[in-house]
Length: 427
Ligand code: ASP
Ligand code: MG
Image 1 (cartoon, protein in one colour):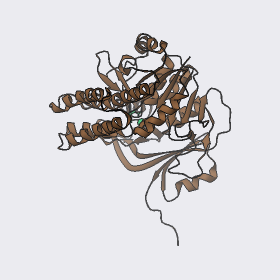
Image 2 (cartoon, rainbow, N blue to C red):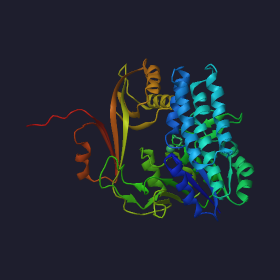
Image 3 (cartoon, protein in one colour):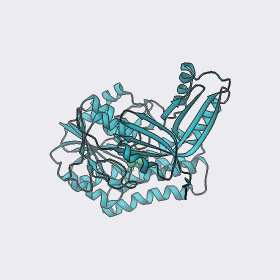
Image 4 (tube, rainbow, N blue to C red):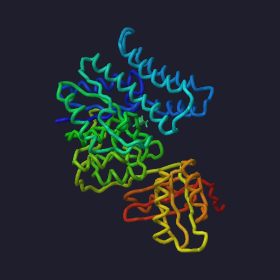
């Protein structure tokens, strides 16, 4: 049976971390593993800077790109001898971008983004593959673009499941039939014309789920720097605890509301084939982690998800007509067109309020389209807190020092949109 492992950026952020992954994998020598890796550490952010600098023709462009290369070469120098072919491989990967950025800007932002940013995963997967082989853990490298087919929605490729399933049969299964591991890139796919697409930030979990689904994996494991799924972000809250078991439903709800542990698109494919998902710690690989699977009936503790960078849009009709089904249909079509995710909403007689993630370019484009029919007031710098399985007593402390703009309660889930303005207290 095939198992799918996913190692994120933090787990391979430097030579030390890659060595740790090697030592974890020693325990799985006998298994058929398909390993999905992200780009090293914060490489994707660094490559986003390269993209912006190229598009805006900033002076710092060569320096930004140099930084990315240096980080990879430095790591390779620690892991390999000078003669190792990995140096030539890395050079080939970077060369492709060298060519792109020497040229004038001709293509669309999103297309260029995917061609440039995807090399983070190309480079990391080559390096980890070479390192595992050096440890005598036989590992074949697989180009994810030969396995995952998407449409040409750059930066948010939509998977063509039928094609992908076929490609897995021809490009992936034969590799897995040989002994040893197969390693590939998370986050990326390819179009029918062989262009590279990406699946959205943090999309490597989703890639692993696509592989798990198509290969009928026995299980999928995500290796992270936390002991498992926690009840809140430990950087923001104290007394956070690990949840040992979660149902697919609970997991999809948590990730939908913004819990950053797993990419929200990960759960559907694995739920559809009833594949258990383990979230484990690469710092403590013996730890139990969290298991996500079917029909888990447990009493969940309160789970808190905080989403910063929110905007509240108060949309009202200019002619005093009711915000009725037609308007709502039209509004939602526009949200979808501008790729704006509605995080929570409320409708009133002649107005409608939505809380969305504040991506200024997308929101301005939306507002331009709404202008004629609607009056829109935008409130920024907000925070959306979602609490599942909430207890009344905990809410006051969550709101402390903030002004509550909006609250929604549905069964055990509570959502609040909060603004950070100083609250005056009576002396
Ligand atoms: N490297 C990509 C990112 O940072 C994908 C991932 O890490 O899952 O967004
Ligand atoms: Mg990542």
